Amino acid sequence: MTTQTCKYDGCNENIWNKSNNDFCLFHDPQIGKKNPSKIKKHIIRNNIYDFTGFKLPGNIIFKDGNFNDELNFEETLIEGVLIFKNCEFVKLKI
Ligand SMILES: [Zn+2]
Image (cartoon, rainbow, N blue to C red; front, side):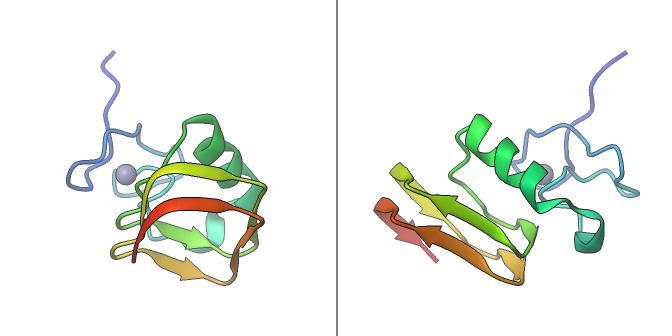
């Protein structure tokens, strides 16, 4: 069995098991089905800095983070509030 990856251009994430259209957890447009704490864990665990094209639910809080690479929010959709509390950034691309 081969593992398929997200169809978003340049994304190498695995396809989300709730996706109807071959997107990963981040790029799938069904924001209402996403669990903010699960997304946050996945972002931290995998050191994700490139949020290009992500469709994120609100209520994600990053605390005391040190983002030592460029954070990229190009074409990112956030449905709600995304909070960075006491975080340091090297570079932000919005
Ligand atoms: Zn993706």
